[in-house]
Amino acid sequence: MEAAGGLVKNNFGEYLFIYRRGKWDLPKGKADDDETGEDTALREVREECGLNDLKIISELPSTYHSFPEKGKNILKHTRWFLMTTKQAEVVLQTEEDIEAHRWLKKEEIFSFIKGKTYASLVEMLKETELLL
Image (cartoon, rainbow, N blue to C red; front, top):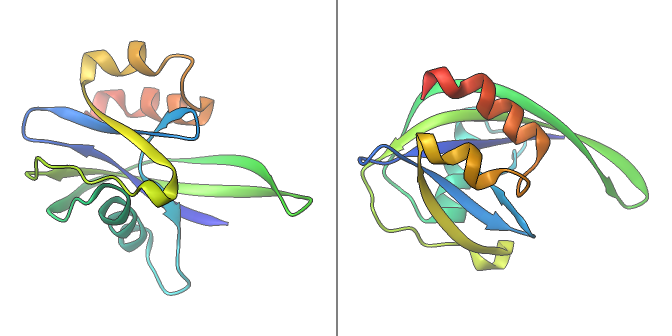
């Protein structure tokens, strides 16, 4: 399964995290058949966070994780992109179980998400740290 998402940075140098299903995460979702990774990431951030003023800066390391679905283990490959926005207001897609959001300064990220996110996301962020 292919997916894509974004690490979004605002004008204040803060990064957007969303709270969904008991974990802090980044906006992401499954690719439609005809979409590029960039298109999927932009669409998912727009849908899940209501951000329309987005610009992709660079591609970040990909992640893999597995999860059970209909009695099978599914391997999900997620491509990540660093994005910027000038838009201040976030409108969360609650029908996707997104309950909250938080803008975090670079130096706050790891202490804030420690033990409250996915291991694959922490590894991607550690690889990415020098790019932020």
